[in-house]
Image (cartoon, rainbow over all chains, first blue to last red; front, side):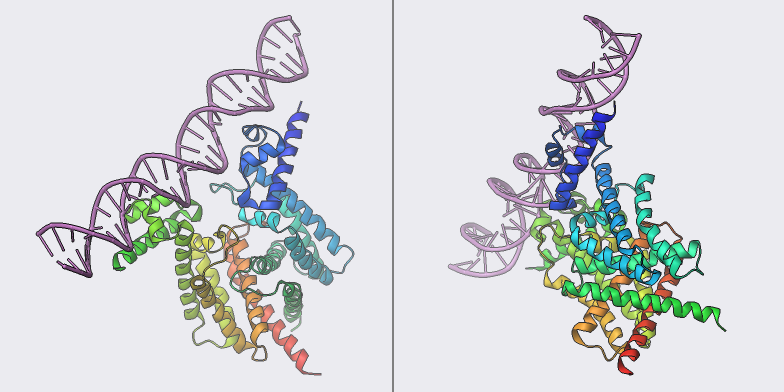
Length: 202
Length: 202
DNA sequence: CGCGACATTGAACAGCGTTCATACTCGATC
DNA sequence: GATCGAGTATGAACGCTGTTCAATGTCGCG
């Protein structure tokens, strides 16, 4: 009889997700969530290990949605266009799902303990697509190097989006974000091919 | 008689900074700080507006140190080397002052209220150097565009450093960070000059 | 029906940042 | 030196948080 248990878990995740979308991670209270979900305060601790674990589940769903949007954006495109599309889709997703996306990076597990496997797999679902497109763009790269380049590419885009959205350091019009990313991606891709032809031709 | 008041403020900042360096932002407790500083709990609220404001002062000092290290790194270098040096200095600073650097981005003011001017000025102290080196590298850019490009450049480096240090999405050797940044910066600079010669030559 | 294993409950707990009535400085004034 | 008063220091108390756990309820199975 895990049906009822799963039903409660689902209600809690949904309630937490709604609160998070509206009030963000800082405005997430165990008492609010359990009230919305229609269970007692303690119910959260029999359904999940604690509030942290519940947040992790919300974040996993956010990652899944992000992964789906990225997949849709790059579908059928050649490698170069795909890499551009991934970056654009990422920026748009972040803007549209601001609070949920913030939580993806603001929520750090207490104690040094790292995320469980089922969560890391969701992260992989996003990163794997970058790796795939990058592999198609630069077939000479492989394995470790590819993983590293993909992460660097993704991280850079992430940084640009993050600092732009939270308006740190400089406050500038946010409709400048997408063109700026496009230009930036262009530089990177150009640079990559230039470097690889430089390596392979004497 | 503001000498005593300032002395207490200084002791509180120092105490908070020490705690933050050791335990990070999450491990920062008002009771610990005031005990370390040798004053009562309420003293924090007569010396500062609250814990948030105290953290802001610690962060301002971190930014100042970062600014100094960046200045030292790019001193006497030509524009291209300077932009490389800034990125490298940033990565090294982040790694060496991990918890303090984390707090720079993890600490968000409660309520939508944005940071006071004296704090934004510290941020400017860092960003202005990027702007300056970028201006020297691309003299044709000016004003708004320059600010925007500088932020994009900085944000990208920040993203790479941030995701690498916190080991999100992919766990990879962290001695791969600096070479990866160097390569990345190279691509951007190449791309920039290629784009500008493309624009100015028919 | 009766039992045992599990889920649910919400008062209680320990901790947090913040407040504020109270007590105390200590330089200015006569 | 005595007296005053404006600014400062104090720490118990407040309201909030996530978490726990004894008591209560639920329900499938022999």
